Length: 326
Ligand SMILES: C[S@@+](CC[C@H](N)C(=O)[O-])C[C@H]1O[C@@H](n2cnc3c(N)ncnc32)[C@H](O)[C@@H]1O
Image (cartoon, rainbow, N blue to C red):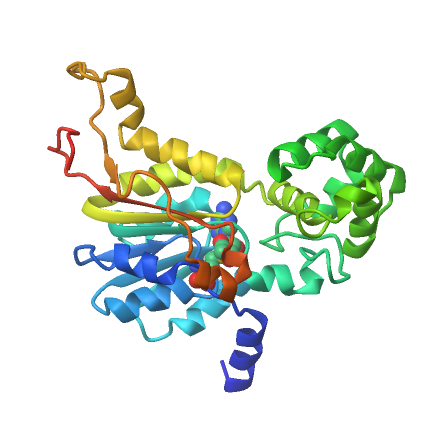
C-alpha cells in the first residue's frame, strides 16, 4: 500500500477513541498473552494498549472492511492479527488463529465516527446520502429496505425500543405515508415534520433517535452483544481482564445484565446470607468497580461523541475461586 492510499484511508477513517486512559489503565494490568479487541475500528484503543504493553499481541475484529483496512495499517509491524468478522464469529476467529484463550477483551460498541461522517454510507442525518447504514456493505439488508418496506407497527417498535423515541407512532406513520424515501436527508425531513414543533428543539437533532434506531435494526446490533460477551468471558485466562464501552441505554442494559450474571451478583442477591447451593456455578468474573464509569467532563468537552459512554470493567476469577469478595 503506498503513502497516498494510506493517507486517503486515514482521512476516511479518523476516530477519536473514547476513555482511552481508562481502557489502558485497566487492560495493561493483564498477564502476558493476546488481547482481543472485538471492535478494532480505526485501531485507536489497540495502538494505545500496545504502546503501554509492547509485549502483548493483539487480535482485532471488525465487521466493517474499511475499519479492518485502517486498523491493519495503523497497527502494521505491531504483531497484530486483524480480521473482518462479526461478534458471532469471535470464537471461531480465536480458534483459527491458534489463540483460543486470551488475557484481555475489549468491546467498544456501536458506530465509529468515520461511519457516521461519510455521507455515502448513509448513517448521517446531516449529509445527503443513500439510505444504507450497513457496517458491512456486503450485508443484504440496508436502511432502504427498513424505511421503505417495514410495516408501520414494526417501525414504531424499533423507534421506541432502540431509539427511546417518544413520537414513534407518528414518525412511523409519516415515514409510511412518504414512501418511497430515497435519501438520508429526505428521511430526516420526514421525521422532523412528524415531531410536534415545540419538541423539535429539545434533545439534539430531531432525527437523531430515529437514525440510531434504524441503524441498530439494519445491523442487528443488540442480539449479538450478549452471546459474544459470554463467549469472550469464557475465553479469558484467569487474571485476564475485560472492558465494555456502550453508548446507549439499550446496549448498556444488555451488557450490565450479562456481566452481573457472570459475576454472580444475581445469585448473591437471591442467596444473601445463605450458603450457595452446590449446583450453583461459581462466579466467573469480578466487576471492578461494580457499577459503570463515565468519561470526564474534559473528555466530553473535547469529544462530544463520548458524552453517552458507559465503561464497565471486569477481571476473570480463577477456577478455584469461591465467589467471595476478591
Ligand atoms: C466505536 S467503534 C470502535 C472504535 C475503536 N475502538 C477505535 O479505537 O478506533 C465500533 C466498531 O465496532 C464495529 N462493530 C459494531 N458491531 C459489530 C459487530 N457485531 N461485529 C463486529 N464489529 C462490530 C463497527 O464496525 C465499528 O468499527
